[in-house]
Image 1 (spheres, rainbow, N blue to C red):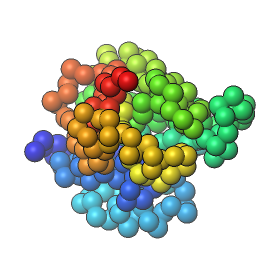
Image 2: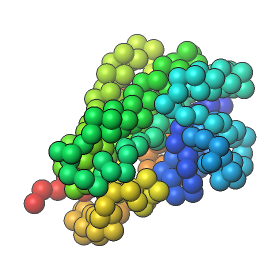
Image 3: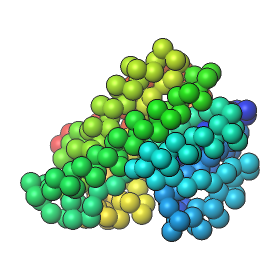
Image 4: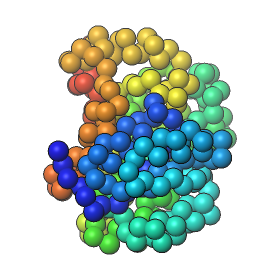
Length: 255
C-alpha cells in the first residue's frame, strides 16, 4: 500500500456513502492522509458527519463552493487546524434538473451559467484557496466523465461543463507547475451515485457500458479511490494536466 502518512488533504463534494468523494476519502484515509471533508450545506451535515467520523483524524467542514466567502473561511480554518495542504479533491458538479431532461438546444442561459459556475469555476476558486497552503507542492484532482468529449444522451450541458473542466485542468497545471503542484482529472465510468440518478436512462447506460467495456463490467467507486491515491502519491510525480480514464476501458472502444 502507498504510505501517505504526514500528508493533509481536503475533499469537496461529500453527499452520502455512494458518493465518489466518499470512496476517495476512504482510500486516502487508509493511506494515512489526514482529511478535511467538505459538505455543501446544513441539510447534508448529519449524514456527512456520520461518515466523516469513520475516518481517523478527519474533520468535517461546511463549504458551498459557489460562495467565495465560504471558500475563504474554509481555507482559513484549514490553515489553523492543519497548517498546510498536500492534496485537494474536487468532486463537485451540478446542473438544474430541467437542463438534463430537455433537448440540449433548449439549454437556458441561467442553466448554462449555473452548471459552469458550480462544476467548473469552483475548481479554480478552491485551487486558488489551497495554493498558499501547498508549501511543499501538491496534487489537485477533479472528477470528469466521457461526456466531456462525446455526446451522451441527456448529459447535455454537463457534458459541455466537463469539457470546460478538463480544459481548466490543463490551464491550472500550466500555471502551477512551477510550484510543484500537479493538476489532473479522473474520468470515471458511470456509477450509480446520487448525482448520476438525475441523468435519464442511467440503468440502460450502465448495462451498455458493462457490455461494451473491455473488462465487461462497470467501474466501482473504490477503483476511482485507488486512482486518487496514486495521483496523491509520489508515484505520479511526473503526471500533470492529464485526464485519466477509470472506466474499465470503455473510452477506447469504437463501433
